[in-house]
Amino acid sequence: MEKIIYSSVFLMYLCLQAFTSSKAEPTDFLSIDCGATSPYKDSQLGIKWETDDKYIKTGKTRQMREGPDFPKQLYSYRYFPSPRSKHCYVLPVRTETTYLLRVRLFPGFRGTSSVDLPVDFNVTFINNLFFSYSANTDTDRVDALYESVFYSFEREEIYLCLVPGTKGTPFINSIELRGLPDTSYRITRSSEVPQFMLLGGRFSMGPKPANRFFRYPDDEFDRFWWAAGPPSFPNFTTFTVDKSFIKNLSFVPYYSNSGVDGYNWPPDKALTDAWIGPNLAFQIKRSRVDTNKVYFAFYFMEIRPEVIKNLSDSNWWEIITYAVDDTSQDYVSISYNDPAYTAPLEEVVLDDNVINVNVSRNSSSAVDGVILNAFEYYYSYDFNISATISRDKIALHELQESFGLQDWQGDPCFPVAWDWLTCDYSEIQKLKLSHMNISGPIPANISNLVDVTEIYLDNNNLEGTIPKSLVSLPKLRRLALDNNKLTGEIPIEFQNKEGFTFTGNPGLYVTRPGTNAPVPGPLTSPPSAAAKSIRRADVPFLAMIFLASLSVIVSFKNGFL
Ligand SMILES: *[C@@H]1O[C@H](CO)[C@@H](O)[C@H](O)[C@H]1NC(C)=O
Ligand SMILES: *[C@@H]1O[C@H](CO)[C@@H](O)[C@H](O)[C@H]1NC(C)=O
Ligand SMILES: *[C@@H]1O[C@H](CO)[C@@H](O)[C@H](O)[C@H]1NC(C)=O
Ligand SMILES: *[C@@H]1O[C@H](CO)[C@@H](O)[C@H](O)[C@H]1NC(C)=O
Ligand SMILES: *[C@@H]1O[C@H](CO)[C@@H](O)[C@H](O)[C@H]1NC(C)=O
Ligand SMILES: *[C@@H]1O[C@H](CO)[C@@H](O)[C@H](O)[C@H]1NC(C)=O
Ligand SMILES: *[C@@H]1O[C@H](CO)[C@@H](O)[C@H](O)[C@H]1NC(C)=O
Ligand SMILES: *[C@@H]1O[C@H](CO)[C@@H](O)[C@H](O)[C@H]1NC(C)=O
Ligand SMILES: *[C@@H]1O[C@H](CO)[C@@H](O)[C@H](O)[C@H]1NC(C)=O
Image 1 (cartoon, rainbow, N blue to C red):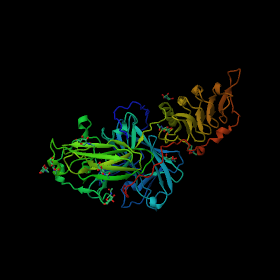
Image 2: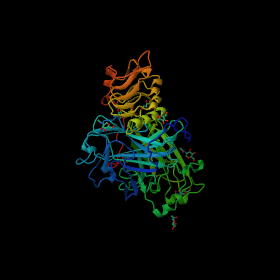
Image 3: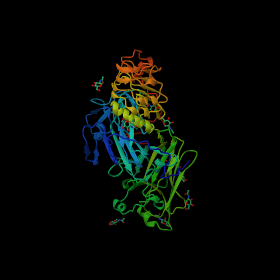
Image 4: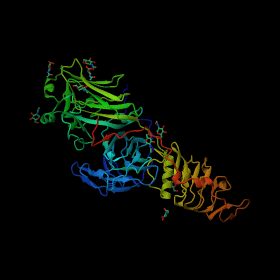
């Protein structure tokens, strides 16, 4: 097992967010009801929901008949019938901030306006697989909820992309982005390998299992806390707290000595009741096996009046929490003589499919019995920060402006390239814009794509001259400009050069050898077979490399464990 050393400095990361278009202001509490027709306020929770049109430029919206079972935002959705390699939301974030990102998918109950099944697709954020979704039959018509925690580093926006699979039309119901305090989930900004984490479970321990789910405003950061109590954990005794007593507790962060206040900031509501027992042991079955890192945070706060009364300088209360696999043990030992306490167990690395948690008393402790108020666990992954290099991103951005291709959003190359691009890892290699009905001039700084080897702009309505700057592209070996409305002289370097085709542009001319006089008139060489064969529909979804398959993690309706 290993523990991660934390540091707030992360040196490796290179900022690639060089530009943004019509950027939305970042907020630490962004709630998007995808497909909704107008914004509204959830009167029960006090959360303001926005429509999603500001954040995505593709897809269609649909409203389903609202039912009693789920919140309003699940009854509308955006779906993506057009066969693109991906559809991306652009979400504004603040730099150097830890975020909770929550996505919910509900295909609706069978009938009017619900999503057609079967369907499968992947959802990624910042080139990391968030989850793979698949729904096949009506029994899959449940509220599927996914949460991740990540650090923004230098980013001012993130991309949340839906990548179509083999069946059906991708869809999405809601997106929530919550900024968390600086000290939260520090593993996500580790100086070694930053992690992003996908929620396994988040529980408030207490005596009653039913109806104790809570979120905002009880948790000011709107984390979802599920109730964990008997009968799901029948072997534990539980304890209910006198509310008046709880109010008097001061909240002393475990890490206050090392200057890290608050740590994960569990909400008071998660701490004000607990499981109490001689020792507490339970098992968690892993639902994801594509990582061997599971992050746990356990929250302890002494709430038993008889124990608190008894605590003194000479009377320490010690508990030990183990989260173990079969071969090794990791533990946190917590000792205190102060009643208010929260403590995390940082990260444990577990190889087994079953995680055993055992909260036990140190035999030398003065107090009988142990306590556990709340805990969370996440599957932890190395954060893949791959992105298209900013030089190419900027050049493509200008190209999109000239050609009216602004509705292609997200990182050009990751997690899968736009249909009209081929990337060599993070550099643009081929530009395939044949038959795209684009018009206007070819921007001169297309030549900033210095690694490009093939450019297909044939069969469009392009006007103006062929930019001289194209001549400077060192690797260019194919240029198809056939069947446009280009005018002027073909750069001398491109004349009679194999792979460079210009037919079907009546206004283009070549320089006649030995004279300076232009020779007007159309060129006659036929379009090459290569140019003909590159069509949008042929672009395969090959460039995708994902982390591993994940299964649906949580059904809000069905609960955990
Ligand atoms: C989705 O992700 C899984 C796991 O990485 C991968 O095997 C699969 O090919 C992906 N599917 C699509 C459509 O990207
Ligand atoms: C709970 O107690 C029963 C018997 O009382 C035992 O069989 C079972 O293993 C216990 N479960 C746990 C998680 O300790
Ligand atoms: C908590 O504080 C209230 C007044 O603020 C007081 O009446 C009550 O006795 C206190 N409870 C405990 C357990 O100290
Ligand atoms: C939990 O740990 C204590 C102390 O190490 C041990 O006595 C007890 O048997 C353990 N319980 C389980 C279920 O592993
Ligand atoms: C139990 O407490 C004793 C005395 O405080 C301490 O020396 C020992 O390290 C503790 N054991 C564990 C496993 O924390
Ligand atoms: C209080 O502390 C004393 C001495 O340390 C110990 O004997 C007693 O069991 C403790 N009482 C409780 C309720 O823990
Ligand atoms: C990040 O993702 C890209 C493609 O999606 C892959 O080629 C690369 O190996 C990944 N890097 C790491 C460190 O996993
Ligand atoms: C091509 O673009 C023009 C405007 O630039 C538009 O009027 C026309 O409908 C488009 N044609 C197709 C087939 O998309
Ligand atoms: C690209 O060209 C436009 C106008 O032609 C110019 O304003 C812009 O500065 C150029 N950008 C770069 C990066 O050269």
